[in-house]
Image (cartoon, rainbow, N blue to C red; front, side, top):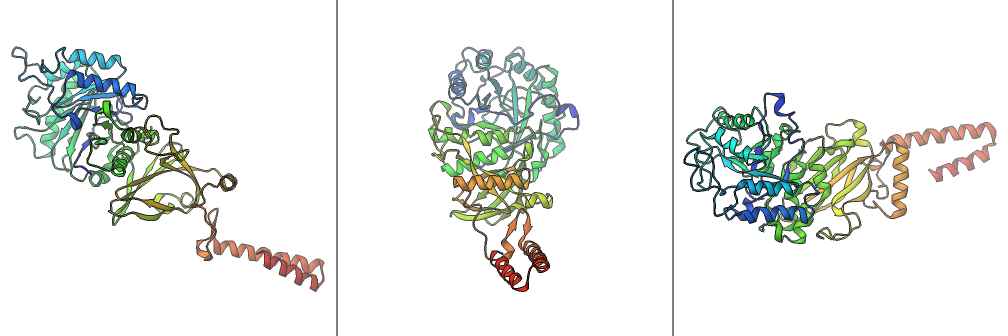
Length: 481
């Protein structure tokens, strides 16, 4: 995994910050930095915006076009101190770019820094927060995101979340105004309040760099929810340096942890494989699930990690990561999935869907012309998800759907058996009684019940038949049992 950064939307002390209608689900879009770095122009931005529309990614929810560092002119406006765009890179000005993006039905974001300079040594916003916020509003920017290169314990609190489009509000050249949560909070709060004064809804976010992003994300999932999601930084999918399975892990974890899904590749020349990953409608649906509940890590055992998340309609997402350099095969206990659930939730049968397999079994790496979507139905599971094969650095992601009632479960299993579905998940019963479970009833209790019924049958037979017929009846029942 690349050393990406984690965004922590501040835990706010006012309800208005979370209930202003913004960021009800994690943001989705594209950012210039990961692929283009400082090599951006007006054409770079508009070509990417058109690609979001032409490829169909906009329909999947990717709506933000985010301009990162290096859009700046060498200096601010000499008279007003307002920020100015580079006239060579953006000859028609930022308002022209913003209008063009909006005409495509998309939103636009811009980058700044909470220091005297940006990380690429352009002018920063420290001391100019109100001037910059006003200019961003005049350009009709929709999202300003904040990156902070501080230790993990620094989680500045933003008193308001308003909307501007995605760019980054970084922490380079902070002139010593850092080191404690309070100092950082106050500095970022200044920009937050300045954005609110503009009257334009501007989404404001903050990143905190972390080397082991997933591990650092594990204990902060409970901080996320509608209006305040943990942002794990831009996606690297399609930029090289990772295998297909590593990219799948990258996208899967960002999706189930409810991170904004901000693409960082060249949208105008991406491969079918890249498109197949970033267009997985099942993972996007989980990321955008209205419950807004981030997955949590149930356990980490050696090179394996189990993550579980709650969804609407009583569904559950289950992800298992293999960090090892070798493939492994394992089973996932339903009791682990519902570790905090009721006994019924641990014993109930569930519908199992594999979210990285296409519904018709075709190549999951197919591009825009794939014959089917993701989310292959794998049958009914009870007790365990069996025979889970995980390749090196791969993440398998499943969804469990509720079956209402034992009769419905039995009927579904019959239909699956007739169609040859779910054989791995419903093997013949083991010879050991401990492994036998029928609709949540362990084998010892099942055998006891059958024994009682057999005894009753014999007593009834004695009442009506002679002893020889009873012996034959008892032998018959014994064979059947």
